[in-house]
Image (cartoon, rainbow, N blue to C red):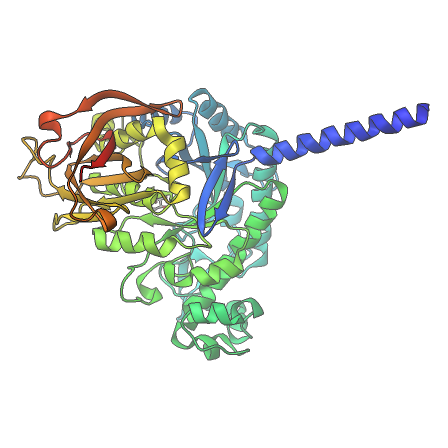
Length: 539
Ligand code: DGJ
């Protein structure tokens, strides 16, 4: 009898531990996929990163107060901050995560989440964040050798000693996070920063040359991968034989991705947070060659290489510094793939870029984040920063109360958006039974600012029901027209409410009517407003 009871208790204990372990796993931030769409789950629910990234040298305790001022001014819910390899492992094998601890505890006080950026072997293509003891031993941790034997300011991805050192440090960081952050203040970690090389398409050192002259690895020879890379399907060969005039850049992409993939896999084995890498983009049109972009990083042309070489990386993410809506929209298309959640971890802090926040939502993206939100140590810049943050801050202030709804709608594919192009031309959105017509440049009435030449207007529409929408926008004027079976019918606005979500329910502030809707439809001024629009077909 006693033995039976003991066994029963042992069983109960195991079941409890198991349930606890499962619920721990369940609340770990994770990325899910459904029908080629993605969501970042935080506490088990879709979450939208309303992000901002600190300047490169701002993640020091003495600098953080001003970063937090910027974070508050921006209404962000997630701060992206670097972790510096040179700081956490100043002596080989001796790790000091006190600064990381400060970042995490301050983030909790400010009630925001963190995305940590592992500035390690690569930072913008260079090794500048390697600890001093590595920089002093360039023979052991060498840079790339250029085609003519020249020194290139970029670490070689083919060196085992560098890989081993990075794996050791990154796993130490992930082990630390696992213990220090049971409440998952840290949502994701970016592995390296804009990896790849400027100044040489690949490494031409004897070690790299030997690999280059060897066979292409089997993972890359899969027919689907070769087809995606636009080369004939073959069963084997050297890099030159398989990839022709693209061999150098694909070899470099494979080498960098394999390196980072191994660092990521080792860290994930310790603590399985979502991991991503960011790309210094190449021009998205015309298929430029690697001497025109940072070679080896996750640029659009080598995404198929990265996917097979670095499966522990959940997201290849575009950093948006290109200008021109045609290019930026193309880039967003290229990185929104069934095998790649869309996340924009950096965008230049210029007013025009705030519009792409809407594009990201319409693509079902998991987040958006302008770069360089703090005054970078120059207190006199504070006023200027407030001005520069404002276009983003206004969007986040409007989006934050309905963040859970926006994240869920984005995941379900319910959001569509238009952003003003440089020609300011009118655009339309097909919303099923209705077409939304959007004119840019002002709210369509007295608040239009014809002298304003910038393209900052934008509108997003979330379809709640056949005839009901949540709409948010700036500097545009909206009207509707019935489509499909309703085409040509008479209709009117049933109700246009301005308001905001509170605890999951739309709370109207007022009903817009009269001048506010009679001129074809509602207008949106400089500051984003949220409307719930209900339409009715009359006959
Ligand atoms: C992109 C990088 O990822 C950032 O760390 C930063 O260097 C910006 N460029 C430019 O300031």
